[in-house]
Image (tube, rainbow, N blue to C red):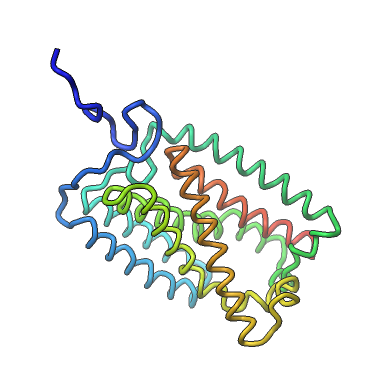
Length: 260
């Protein structure tokens, strides 16, 4: 029999050995090229970032959903598939298992941190002072999963990661998407140093301290982006980083509310 190329008949989003991962690089055939699609996606995110910083409430949710749909449309326009976004049907079960395990792990770490006097202060946040149970539930069950996790994971570990991975491989995809993820957090970090007492102690309440805090937030979230990308790569599914992202944010709100 004639020899077969190892990549023949390999489903999108799978390696030749059958494990989950990004499909081998190839030239997409779509109405728009990979890099124009990448630039378009970054533009959508830039507009969404400004709008989300200015708006809140239901408009924030609508903005996040519309931006998510536009980004997935850009990926499709460039010839991408659900597998390129980390949403291949065959990987969802595995991704869900990863997500549940990560949520449990974050819950244990947060519980220990809230109970230990040495780390309890890290969860204190002045923004929780006037929050009631209803607002907490909305944040944990609606605003975090839809307004934050859905958009950010689809954008950075889904569409942007998938576009760059096809053109340059997973290392470049991780580096580029994580850097942009860090920059995405510049606007949300503008008042970070004064909102959390533990950070005010470190950075102070001056303009210089606020700038240093923003830079630290960008570096921290970029590093978190690398971790999220690795979870997406290893699990083959976007659900794994989604689970960790939701747990870090939503359980953080919960613990911060309880220790206020």
